[in-house]
View 1 (tube, helix red, strand yellow):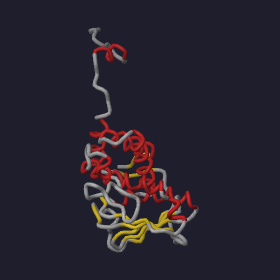
View 2 (cartoon, rainbow, N blue to C red; view 1 turned 135 degrees about the horizontal axis):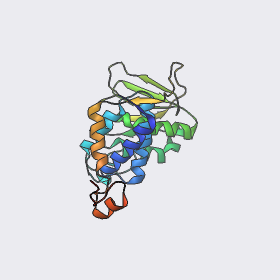
View 3 (tube, rainbow, N blue to C red; view 1 turned 180 degrees about the vertical axis):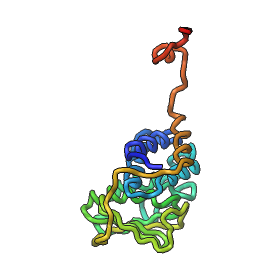
View 4 (tube, one colour; view 1 turned 45 degrees about the vertical axis):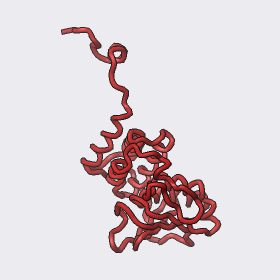
Length: 216
C-alpha cells in the first residue's frame, strides 16, 4: 500500500520509540526510513523486522563498542540504526579517504540513509557495500548495483563505507511516496501503540465525547 513520506516517518519514529529507542534516536530512525522510502525501498518491512529482533534490547548492547578498527557490538550483531548514527559522527573519516568497516550487522540497508547524510557533510558520494551489493549516494541521488538481490538481507558478516569518486549517471532521485505491506504497517503500529498513555477517568472527562456521563 502507498503512504506519504510524512506518514512513514511519523510511524517509524513512534514505533522505534515504542521498541525502546530514545526519542532522539527514534527521530533519527524516522528520518532514515523516510529517506529510504522515498527511493522505493522496503524500509517499513525491514524496520518492522529490526524492531522485532531488538525489542527492548539495550542500546549499548547493539551499538559499536569502539569506533577504532572494525566496528562490532557487545551482543554480536550491530544495530544498523545505532551504527548509522555513529557513522554520522565519523563522517570526516570518509572525507579523508578512510574506510569505515563494520562487523556482523543486521539489515544493512538501514545504514544507507546515514551514509547519505555523511555524503552531504563531506560533499562527495559515499558507497555502502556488503556481499555483492553496492549502493552509492550523494545524499539525494541513489545508485544500486545489486546483481544477486542482497540489499534486503537480514544480516551480513561485514559491511564497508567508503568515499566514492563519482555516482553513476543512472542514479535516481527521490519520489514523494513510499510503499509498505499491510503486515509491516500493522507491526509498526503495534510498537507505536506502546507510546500512547492509557485512558483514565480524568483524560476521558477532558477529551471529546460524553466522558462518564450518559446522554442517551
